[in-house]
Every structure is written in structure tokens, then in C-alpha cells.
Image (cartoon, rainbow, N blue to C red):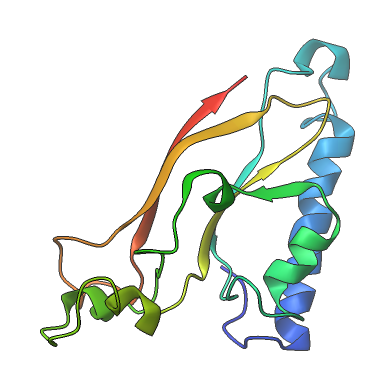
Amino acid sequence: HISHKICSEEQRSHAKELTSWINSFAVSGMDTNLDTEKIARKHAMILCGDLNSPVSLPRTGLSVIMADGKWTDLWNHHGTYDNSATMPSSVYKSKSRLSSFFKPMLGMRIDYILSYRSEDLLSVICNEIKVLNEGGHPEASDHCAVWADLHLS
């Protein structure tokens, strides 16, 4: 979870700190006490969470993370625009007469599953990804969960 202040220096700073920390794992082979040759191609890195950043908005924490070109937004593999809003969860519970097609357009996707690309790590293949927006109680959280079926190769 990074800052809720969208497009702020605080949010971009959180993203820079996070990617710096993650990159230190990638460079050191995940553990400075292990031989990187032995662990190469046996691990993958996946970043999941609330980035408080709409997909195409510039100067967000997400844009900082994606700028280095090492991350893939797994939603782009098998996600659809339909039912992609993760926040607020109340858009799916609304009793309004809007069709289920239009309800997700009232929200935004700010929760992500990202995979890190490196020759030293396993590839992450996304078979299916979706927002879990049915059932449950909208009062439990203002976000809907994102679910993905992933395969490592």
C-alpha cells in the first residue's frame, strides 16, 4: 500500500523506495548468503497491492514503478475493461438501475498484480485475472479483491 495522495511527491517517493528495495533483492539474488547461481531461475517476484494509482494517470506511484520497464501489469494479459474497477467496492453493490456494464465505469482500478521481468527469474504467465466483485459485504472494505491464476515457467 502506497500513499493515498494520488499524483503526490509522497506517493512517488513511496514507489521509489519500494522499487529500490525490490531491485536490491533482484541484484543480490534474493539473499546475500546464497549462491546466485544456485537460485537463478527458481524464483519469481510478484508485487500485489493497493497502489492508489489509476492505470493511465501520469505522475503516480504506478507510473514510477512501471517507468523502469522491469514490471508487467498482469491485467494486460487477460483482464478486460468490464468489471475492472477495484474501488470503491460499493459500485458493484449499488441498487441503481444502471446496467452491470456501466457500474465498473463509476470506479477505478487502483489495485494491481505486477510481475518483475528478469533473465535471472522465472517468467510469470497470467492465465486469468479478475476482480472479485460478487458476494461479500461492501462495508467490509472500500476495495474489491483482485484474483489471478498464475503459472511460473
